[in-house]
Amino acid sequence: MCDSVDEVTQAVLAKNDGLAADLREELARRGVCVVNLLSSPGSGKTELLGRVLARAVEWSLPVAALTADLATENDADRLARSGAPVKQLLTDGLCHLEARQLRGHVENWLPTGTSLLFVENVGNLVCPASYDLGESLRIVLMAVTEGEDKPLKYPTAFGSAHLVVLTKTDLAGPAGFDETAFETNVQRVNPGVEVVRSCARTGAGVDVLLERVLAVRDGAPVHRPPLAPRPHTHSHTHTHTETHEGAEAGLVP
Image (cartoon, rainbow, N blue to C red; front, side, top):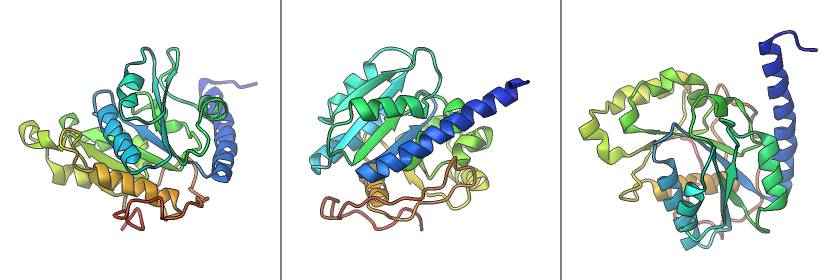
């Protein structure tokens, strides 16, 4: 019997980690690369994901997406315009996704042959950072309007990211965003992680982001963040014939 809130929390996380490890192995056998997207509300995550999904459909890639929210199916409706299969996951008040929830949708919904599954986590940089979903790649997104000190305020989220995406870069000037300070702060909590700059409005960074994901799907080495829930220990078996010709071979320098 657990004697404290901390012990209860650790027990819950340990159970989730076990389920995530099993799910990661299962997904590896099926050749599915899962991308877990974390960000604050209003970061532009949904709009950017919609652009990425549309490009994946354009490239004839077997892609799908799950999007999680406490209520409404607004994001699923927006993402479905890309032409990719999309499913809304309502958390009924839970502020994060857990491996058990993802497993249910993988078993009951994921279209046969899917090799890329994007999971848009609940908008929150606190709780979701502690829960491993069995993902192949964890991406943390942040808008320039959120301030360059965000990585220091949310070190668990940024410190567990395999890749960081800076969004709404077209607003960097008006927002007075200090990109050098931001990069320094990212590297303080996650040395060596790559930062991809993007703008959903213009499409900047969409191809780069998709190419990074495809590289991981095809077995490229993944950056090892200091706070990763679990190391990436498997590779996928797809050939590069499915990959856009411009895809790069690796994720990190």
